[in-house]
Length: 297
Image 1 (tube, rainbow, N blue to C red):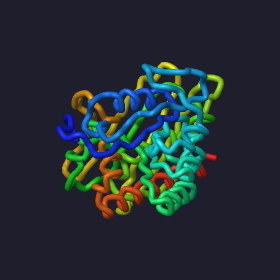
Image 2: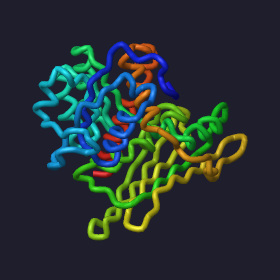
Image 3: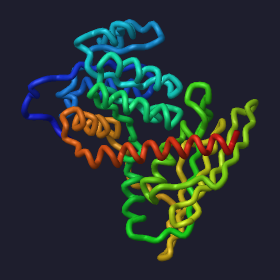
Image 4: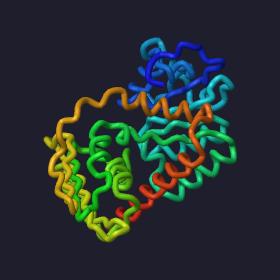
């Protein structure tokens, strides 16, 4: 689904975007541009707590209208993480398919509950993971393949993030966990600490993880004013080490690539085996995030 579709699809799914921050704005742009997957989707409007009326000719609609409209068949949930669970539940109960930015919930049990609801309603519930569509991840996947890990560290730095809106750092940073689990399989938490200086908007979370083969992995999430958004990896293998991430090019259209996957799910083109594996990975990462939060609190 990379290029334009030469055939106009027989039907289009009506879409509403909930939340028009960074991710929501990118989603609206992709929906309005003539991409292959966008041809199956029709942007009807957006929902926002702010009074915006209209963005680039796309009309703002109320949450009530989005839920009750027969025209709206799909909701893109792009609001703050703390509101995801509630929005997903409302839209599933209204009979809509869902694309939600990660993390879909702030607990494993809630995610399982929502997937059960989606199944009961016969709807697609898709959690975005653009970090798995990045050039850096493709590079790491290739580097790690077939190698025996001895130990590793993943450090992520960025500017401050409000916990009240985005959840505990293990949840707001769950894409780092997703990388580690996708590269090295299921993990367990050995220990975790959180250092915070709220008055300086600074936090550092240090998590010690272990692979199924008892190999140690350290995940460090550090956020504060003046810290650049960056990922640093050090992986030691039996056959050598990977100590820095080369510049592997720009991540182009990763949200669009994620939309392509979502449309494939809507059209029933993703195998049951793939869906089960994806759900297992997402639930495992949410469980790890919960365990980390328990250690830190």
